[in-house]
Image 1 (tube, helix red, strand yellow):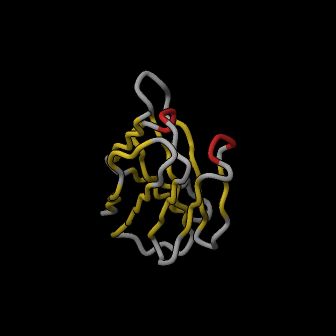
Image 2: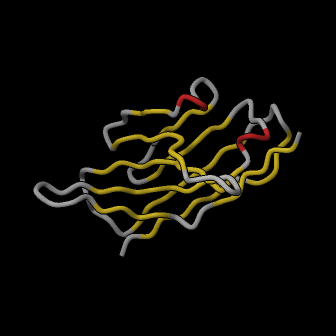
Length: 119
């Protein structure tokens, strides 16, 4: 069974930095991707950044130049968040996605972790 666990987060002042980590366990897939999503109160969940197992990263426009996604170890992803603003306040979710030829991809989500940016 695949488990996805986020860590980090917390409270930070506007302009500050924070890091989030995510670890996925229970999978042996060689083709996978990991991503960070966020959901602010009253808003839909939105993609923040993603990275493939090969290290190809993509970012939402609203975090380009401020957030960096990286993966130093297999099934682990880190999100460095700089120049945070109150608009970044949200619950951040990690998604682990595996790919198998000729079959739908499988998605596994963490429970989410709260990031609060005070003004």
